Image (cartoon, one colour):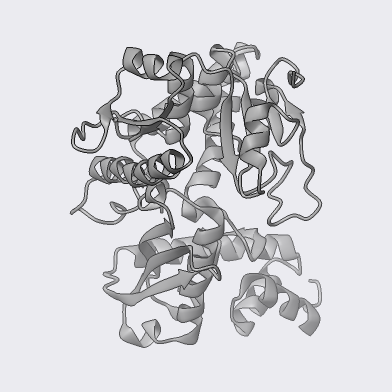
Length: 389
């Protein structure tokens, strides 16, 4: 049997966060193999967590994180079984870490079970379409793998912890569960960003609650975009631009209903048309709504305004070595699962040959440059970027 050194125990303890004696016992059982000991720790932690999961977790704390610019923030409810653990420094730190992670990683759901079945089915359909050119025998396996990757992007418990990407959020919570001996779990969270369209995103308000249904939360988010639309309308008209605000959810006192022919007439007469409330249906993203309206109204390009300079090989806010792409094809975006827009929107743009320009709208003058066709940001199309006339 391999000798279990103090250094090995300390290294394993730092990696797992387990107690000293527990680390030593696991290393001894794994004959000094760190990887095997870590697997044992995860298996045992999962079993213990499963046993505790049925126990009522009615204590806990609400943690709030406000970003330094005071324009974005997170609220997360972290539960445990007793007030004693809720006041524990480690539990408090976990709540703070989770709030920071949610702000950075922007998950959409707490657990896989909360993702609507129809959304999972739609994502599976998209992935099956993407692998249609692969051998039939492996199509299902590849699509399932892509679906698993999508879960790891969208579901909090499956995401990689931003402070240690070797661990998932589930691993981090299991470690605290193991050390406290209580059922520790995330009940719900909400992520807020200044600006009407971000008052509520998707199902954030309905997570962990049977009061506000998910479809209702989506409608709340869609109607909130009208706030931005009204503000933009006034700003443009102050500059002398004739403007019309149209919505797919009727609000006759403040906006026109979206009617395709009417919108086209406004455009022909040189007016700016602002479209709010998405498609008017829940479970459909604003990305998809933009792609749909772009096709309906004969747009030459879909402009995706973001806070970074374009599409990168990795998150530039986390990885300083990330590479900016100047041009991507739709196939590259789908194959490499680059976060340009949601996959339904990308598929729609691909089918309708609608190019996408991703650019940083926070750089002064960039919106004007994008409209003028200057070579900024990332051009997504199977055809090269057109040269400005």
